[in-house]
Amino acid sequence: MRFTYPQGATPLDPDTIAGLIPHLTTQRELNEFEARNILLGERWALRARGENRGILLLTTLRKLHTRMFDLTWRWAGEFRRVETNIGIPPHQIPMRLEQLCRNTRYQIENSVFGWDELAARFHHEMVSIHPFPNGNGRHARLAADLLLTRHGQSRFTWGSRSLVESSGVRKTYIAALQSADNGDYEPLIRFCRS
Ligand SMILES: Nc1ncnc2c1ncn2[C@@H]1O[C@H](COP(=O)(O)OP(=O)(O)OP(=O)(O)O)[C@@H](O)[C@H]1O
Ligand SMILES: [Mg+2]
Image (cartoon, rainbow, N blue to C red; front, top):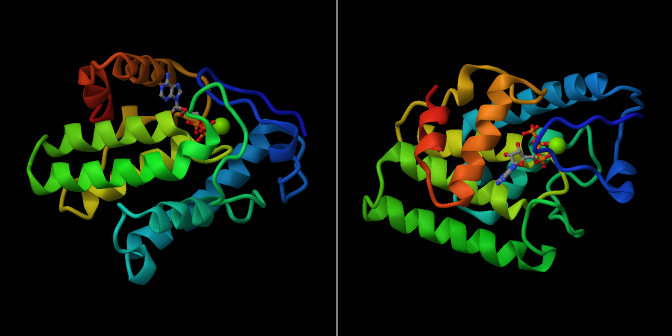
Protein backbone atom coordinates (compact mmCIF):
# COMPACT_ATOMS: atom_id res chain seq x y z
CA MET A 1 0.00 0.00 0.00
CA ARG A 2 1.41 3.40 -1.00
CA PHE A 3 0.15 6.33 1.02
CA THR A 4 0.05 9.92 -0.22
CA TYR A 5 -0.90 12.86 1.96
CA PRO A 6 -2.76 16.07 1.16
CA GLN A 7 -1.74 19.31 2.90
CA GLY A 8 -2.43 19.30 6.64
CA ALA A 9 -2.76 15.51 6.94
CA THR A 10 -0.98 13.46 9.59
CA PRO A 11 1.52 11.00 8.08
CA LEU A 12 0.90 7.47 9.39
CA ASP A 13 3.45 5.64 11.54
CA PRO A 14 4.26 1.93 10.87
CA ASP A 15 2.08 0.59 13.73
CA THR A 16 -0.88 2.58 12.48
CA ILE A 17 -0.33 1.31 8.94
CA ALA A 18 -0.15 -2.28 10.22
CA GLY A 19 -3.74 -1.87 11.42
CA LEU A 20 -5.14 -1.66 7.89
CA ILE A 21 -7.75 -4.43 7.45
CA PRO A 22 -8.49 -4.62 3.67
CA HIS A 23 -5.80 -5.40 1.12
CA LEU A 24 -5.43 -2.21 -0.92
CA THR A 25 -2.65 -0.72 -3.02
CA THR A 26 -3.40 2.94 -3.70
CA GLN A 27 -4.44 5.95 -1.65
CA ARG A 28 -7.41 6.32 -3.94
CA GLU A 29 -8.62 2.80 -3.13
CA LEU A 30 -8.17 3.56 0.55
CA ASN A 31 -10.08 6.84 0.27
CA GLU A 32 -12.98 5.03 -1.42
CA PHE A 33 -12.95 2.17 1.07
CA GLU A 34 -12.94 4.62 3.99
CA ALA A 35 -15.70 6.69 2.39
CA ARG A 36 -18.01 3.64 2.30
CA ASN A 37 -17.16 2.83 5.91
CA ILE A 38 -17.80 6.45 6.96
CA LEU A 39 -21.19 6.38 5.24
CA LEU A 40 -22.20 3.44 7.47
CA GLY A 41 -20.94 5.35 10.51
CA GLU A 42 -22.91 8.39 9.47
CA ARG A 43 -26.07 6.35 9.06
CA TRP A 44 -25.57 4.92 12.53
CA ALA A 45 -25.01 8.39 13.97
CA LEU A 46 -28.09 9.87 12.30
CA ARG A 47 -30.30 7.23 13.96
CA ALA A 48 -29.24 8.75 17.33
CA ARG A 49 -30.50 6.16 19.77
CA GLY A 50 -29.20 4.53 22.94
CA GLU A 51 -25.43 4.79 23.33
CA ASN A 52 -25.30 7.35 20.55
CA ARG A 53 -27.55 10.01 22.15
CA GLY A 54 -25.23 12.49 23.79
CA ILE A 55 -22.51 13.61 21.40
CA LEU A 56 -20.56 15.46 24.15
CA LEU A 57 -19.42 12.24 25.83
CA LEU A 58 -16.10 10.46 25.39
CA THR A 59 -17.85 7.13 24.88
CA THR A 60 -19.99 8.54 22.06
CA LEU A 61 -17.06 10.31 20.39
CA ARG A 62 -15.06 7.07 20.45
CA LYS A 63 -18.01 5.01 19.27
CA LEU A 64 -18.49 7.42 16.37
CA HIS A 65 -14.88 6.93 15.27
CA THR A 66 -15.33 3.15 15.62
CA ARG A 67 -18.44 3.18 13.43
CA MET A 68 -16.71 5.35 10.81
CA PHE A 69 -13.55 3.25 10.50
CA ASP A 70 -14.20 -0.24 11.94
CA LEU A 71 -14.05 -2.06 8.57
CA THR A 72 -10.86 -0.23 7.60
CA TRP A 73 -8.58 0.05 10.66
CA ARG A 74 -8.10 -2.37 13.57
CA TRP A 75 -7.49 0.60 15.90
CA ALA A 76 -10.78 2.34 15.03
CA GLY A 77 -12.12 4.12 18.13
CA GLU A 78 -8.85 3.74 20.07
CA PHE A 79 -7.02 6.83 21.22
CA ARG A 80 -3.64 7.69 19.71
CA ARG A 81 -0.56 6.40 21.55
CA VAL A 82 2.13 8.08 19.47
CA GLU A 83 3.16 11.72 19.02
CA THR A 84 1.97 13.40 15.79
CA ASN A 85 2.85 16.66 14.05
CA ILE A 86 -0.57 18.10 14.97
CA GLY A 87 -1.99 17.27 18.37
CA ILE A 88 -1.20 17.14 22.08
CA PRO A 89 0.92 14.50 23.86
CA PRO A 90 -1.05 11.20 23.81
CA HIS A 91 -1.37 10.79 27.60
CA GLN A 92 -3.30 14.09 27.82
CA ILE A 93 -5.97 13.07 25.29
CA PRO A 94 -8.72 11.74 27.63
CA MET A 95 -8.42 14.69 30.00
CA ARG A 96 -8.44 17.33 27.26
CA LEU A 97 -11.40 15.71 25.50
CA GLU A 98 -13.33 15.59 28.80
CA GLN A 99 -12.55 19.28 29.23
CA LEU A 100 -13.72 20.05 25.72
CA CYS A 101 -17.02 18.23 26.28
CA ARG A 102 -17.53 20.00 29.61
CA ASN A 103 -16.70 23.43 28.21
CA THR A 104 -18.99 22.92 25.23
CA ARG A 105 -21.88 21.84 27.46
CA TYR A 106 -21.31 24.96 29.56
CA GLN A 107 -21.26 27.14 26.43
CA ILE A 108 -24.56 25.63 25.30
CA GLU A 109 -26.27 26.01 28.69
CA ASN A 110 -25.14 29.63 29.01
CA SER A 111 -25.50 30.65 25.34
CA VAL A 112 -21.88 31.83 25.30
CA PHE A 113 -21.64 31.67 21.48
CA GLY A 114 -24.03 31.40 18.56
CA TRP A 115 -24.40 27.85 17.22
CA ASP A 116 -22.04 28.26 14.28
CA GLU A 117 -19.25 29.69 16.38
CA LEU A 118 -19.79 27.07 19.08
CA ALA A 119 -19.59 24.17 16.60
CA ALA A 120 -16.61 25.69 14.73
CA ARG A 121 -14.71 26.12 18.01
CA PHE A 122 -15.61 22.58 19.04
CA HIS A 123 -14.34 21.26 15.70
CA HIS A 124 -11.08 23.18 15.93
CA GLU A 125 -10.36 21.99 19.47
CA MET A 126 -11.11 18.37 18.47
CA VAL A 127 -8.64 18.42 15.58
CA SER A 128 -6.07 20.24 17.73
CA ILE A 129 -6.27 17.46 20.32
CA HIS A 130 -6.04 14.88 17.50
CA PRO A 131 -7.43 12.01 19.59
CA PHE A 132 -7.05 9.21 17.04
CA PRO A 133 -4.14 7.87 14.95
CA ASN A 134 -5.95 8.99 11.77
CA GLY A 135 -9.35 10.14 10.57
CA ASN A 136 -9.41 13.10 12.95
CA GLY A 137 -10.51 15.64 10.35
CA ARG A 138 -13.39 13.55 9.08
CA HIS A 139 -14.44 12.46 12.57
CA ALA A 140 -14.35 16.00 13.98
CA ARG A 141 -16.35 17.35 11.01
CA LEU A 142 -19.09 14.77 11.53
CA ALA A 143 -19.00 15.33 15.31
CA ALA A 144 -19.51 19.09 14.80
CA ASP A 145 -22.37 18.38 12.38
CA LEU A 146 -24.04 16.08 14.93
CA LEU A 147 -23.63 18.69 17.65
CA LEU A 148 -25.58 21.07 15.40
CA THR A 149 -28.28 18.68 14.18
CA ARG A 150 -28.97 17.28 17.67
CA HIS A 151 -29.77 20.85 18.70
CA GLY A 152 -32.09 21.55 15.80
CA GLN A 153 -29.51 23.38 13.67
CA SER A 154 -28.60 22.52 10.07
CA ARG A 155 -25.26 20.81 9.50
CA PHE A 156 -22.23 22.63 8.11
CA THR A 157 -21.41 22.60 4.39
CA TRP A 158 -17.60 22.58 4.86
CA GLY A 159 -16.76 24.34 1.59
CA SER A 160 -19.34 22.21 -0.29
CA ARG A 161 -16.66 19.89 -1.70
CA SER A 162 -14.69 16.86 -0.56
CA LEU A 163 -11.84 17.84 1.74
CA VAL A 164 -10.12 14.46 1.52
CA GLU A 165 -7.94 15.22 -1.54
CA SER A 166 -5.70 18.24 -2.12
CA SER A 167 -7.70 21.13 -3.56
CA GLY A 168 -8.27 24.85 -3.25
CA VAL A 169 -11.09 24.17 -0.80
CA ARG A 170 -8.81 22.07 1.37
CA LYS A 171 -6.24 24.88 1.35
CA THR A 172 -8.87 27.34 2.52
CA TYR A 173 -9.96 24.89 5.23
CA ILE A 174 -6.41 24.34 6.55
CA ALA A 175 -5.68 28.10 6.45
CA ALA A 176 -8.89 28.72 8.44
CA LEU A 177 -7.77 26.16 11.07
CA GLN A 178 -4.39 27.91 11.28
CA SER A 179 -6.13 31.25 11.90
CA ALA A 180 -8.10 29.52 14.66
CA ASP A 181 -4.79 28.22 16.10
CA ASN A 182 -3.95 31.92 16.48
CA GLY A 183 -7.28 32.75 18.11
CA ASP A 184 -9.11 34.12 15.05
CA TYR A 185 -12.19 31.94 14.44
CA GLU A 186 -13.86 34.12 11.81
CA PRO A 187 -12.34 32.41 8.71
CA LEU A 188 -13.32 28.97 10.05
CA ILE A 189 -16.88 30.02 10.92
CA ARG A 190 -17.23 31.46 7.41
CA PHE A 191 -15.71 28.36 5.80
CA CYS A 192 -18.01 25.96 7.65
CA ARG A 193 -21.08 27.55 6.02
CA SER A 194 -19.52 28.05 2.56
N1 LIG B 1 -3.00 23.79 11.95
C1 LIG B 1 -3.98 22.93 12.27
N2 LIG B 1 -4.65 23.12 13.43
C2 LIG B 1 -5.65 22.31 13.77
N3 LIG B 1 -6.04 21.25 13.03
C3 LIG B 1 -5.41 21.00 11.89
C4 LIG B 1 -4.34 21.82 11.44
N4 LIG B 1 -3.91 21.34 10.26
C5 LIG B 1 -4.68 20.26 9.98
N5 LIG B 1 -5.58 20.03 10.94
C6 LIG B 1 -6.62 18.98 11.00
O1 LIG B 1 -6.05 17.71 10.95
C7 LIG B 1 -6.75 16.91 10.00
C8 LIG B 1 -5.83 15.83 9.47
O2 LIG B 1 -5.73 14.82 10.45
P1 LIG B 1 -6.03 13.30 10.11
O3 LIG B 1 -5.16 12.88 8.98
O4 LIG B 1 -6.02 12.53 11.36
O5 LIG B 1 -7.55 13.40 9.63
P2 LIG B 1 -8.19 12.74 8.36
O6 LIG B 1 -9.66 12.63 8.59
O7 LIG B 1 -7.47 11.49 8.02
O8 LIG B 1 -7.91 13.83 7.31
P3 LIG B 1 -8.85 14.50 6.26
O9 LIG B 1 -9.23 15.81 6.85
O10 LIG B 1 -7.95 14.62 5.11
O11 LIG B 1 -10.00 13.64 6.00
C9 LIG B 1 -7.20 17.90 8.97
O12 LIG B 1 -8.33 17.47 8.26
C10 LIG B 1 -7.58 19.07 9.83
O13 LIG B 1 -8.88 18.91 10.35
MG1 LIG C 1 -5.48 11.43 7.44
